[in-house]
Image (cartoon, rainbow, N blue to C red):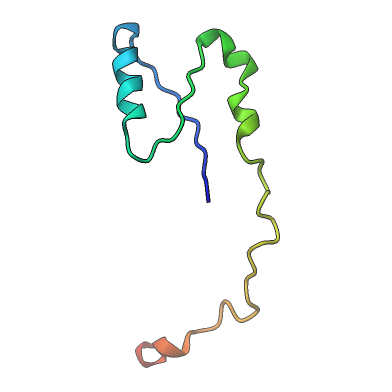
Length: 76
């Protein structure tokens, strides 16, 4: 499963290149996109993120969810 995250960082201009290079070299980072302050009003990155509710109906809670577990009856 691939998960995408949007991270906003406030970094001084003189340290921006160093910070981006550091993030790109992390072993779990696959793609880094930078958004200039001008583009924040038209943020295309948020369109690539999964919409809310995409997993609706995929998690089933059993009817006996609130009943005590047999494994713990010695402690009750």
